[in-house]
Length: 374
Image 1 (tube, rainbow, N blue to C red):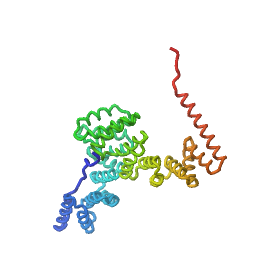
Image 2 (cartoon, one colour):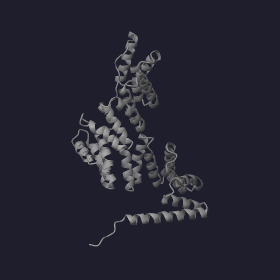
Image 3 (cartoon, rainbow, N blue to C red):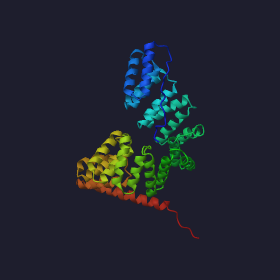
Image 4 (cartoon, helix red, strand yellow):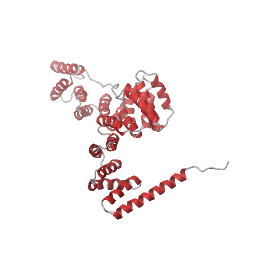
């Protein structure tokens, strides 16, 4: 499934007169592009643009071929230059949004696609892709608003139905079951169906059932968005950290900016005694978000386990400063102070832990319904 079902717009016409040589070169570039010879096509488009920098179609198609070559930032620049030439051309914004989405940048995709939807609210592919970007951002209400009206206008594919189903699932909406029923009879929809069912079991903490469904989904389509991450998390919940490492590694490699994938991979590695690998992943996560409390806390605990107590102090203190009501973090910091011979500070942290746990017990007691006389 994935996002391969969304197609790029390719421009093949000549909107303003050129000489015969320019027309022939543009036609040759398009032919190379359609034959999958993207590097050669890029060279032709660049050659055209050195002489005619305002040739919109050449610039837009350059973005397409650079994207297919994996030259992400260059492709973004080419598309942006095309947008500057023709701000009202929604298809160019769609192509740029699709590029961002495929490279794990849903926020950038959503920003571009929002404007494309404003320009072309009737364009089903644009609204569906915008909806999927919103799903990736967890903006499920807004995603449903974009996707739901389109599924009756045109036959949706499995990726779109999956995104719609996931949004309904996370919101606890009845529409989730309707999407499952549709996927059950949809060509190529079985993998997405199993994936959604697995996520529903995971939400309900039925991890064995979730694992069974997720494995079936992986057999049908291993490229489902974030399937590897969900599979890894399920293994972790089952205490199978060794099995979790492979899918979490795959998730982190597919989405290098996914903080959750990096954190949980680091967690799985440290559970398996692979502390140095865990630290490398944690540092990678902190480069993405230097203020991530969970990442700082885990880094401190891993360093502490390795006996690098002086290095462990700074990340644990930062984590506690940002989340002072977390008893586990404060206990870890107390233990570290104890190891460093800082008894007064250790006692302060242990006292705080006792206070926080007592407060939690009282809150749980207050939340427990009291029995009434029959």
